[in-house]
Image (tube, rainbow, N blue to C red; front, side):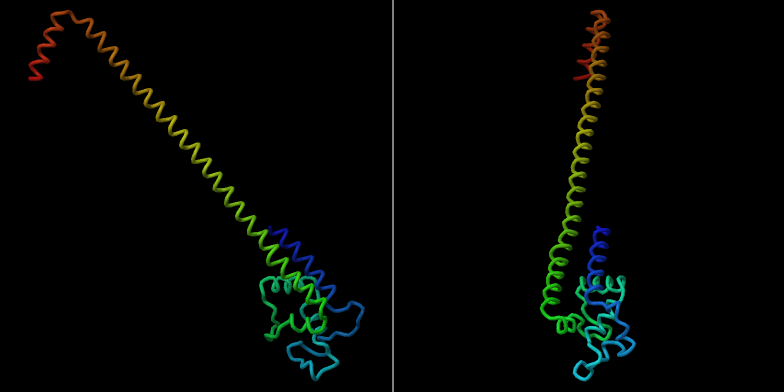
Length: 188
């Protein structure tokens, strides 16, 4: 899951870096020229396009772009100053950004997170099935163990009864009748 998550973040971060980040052929650094995008008034400053400043600030390298993408996945679309990064990019790039960002949100929210949830649910169900199977084997072992012990007890009782029968046959009739009389005396 972590590898799949990292791969998806890397691909999205790379895509956002290439599309929203600074142009590698441009010699102008909007961050050096204009400062942070949070302090730019788009109505006053025409030399500093807000989307380009934010692109350079939040998508200037792949790892920073991946972090910004991760924040997007969690629903954090704000800049350091609290302005909406998505609104600024949407105003600058228009329909294609809105379409791409909407698809990205749908894929991550309903697709990717659903897959992660399904993996955890499947692992839980598999674990429960394994526990049920283990419990069944333990129960079968207990039944077999009790049956064997009861069979041993019954065999021992039979052996004692057989010994008693042999002792009883070995006694002569007078001793046997005396024993029976003693039993009657004892019982009355």
